[in-house]
Length: 107
Image (cartoon, rainbow, N blue to C red; front, side):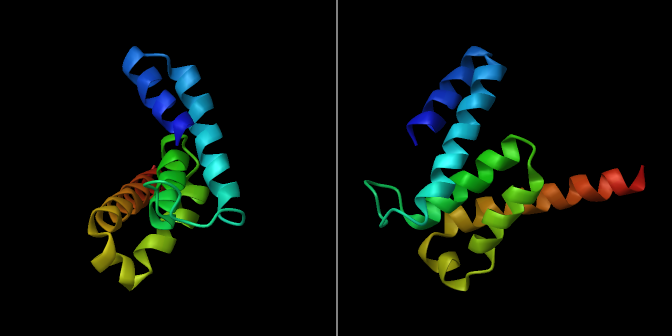
């Protein structure tokens, strides 16, 4: 999550290239952590880690990987009651991806 926080700072500073590099590091490390870590790690639950990976890939323009992670949240009915904010955010991003894909198909 440190790389993610650095990316947010870099976005604020307008350093897009460094932001993208750190988002990729963040997403990759979250992805690698699923097979190695026991969640929660600090304040980060497994659901939050899945969301952060998916949201990071979305921000990087990798819809395929974003969908892969965010669907894990939306398709799990238990998450809706346990972490409704993450459920809603994941659903919103998936809807945005769908709208974008539909717009590209029409062109």
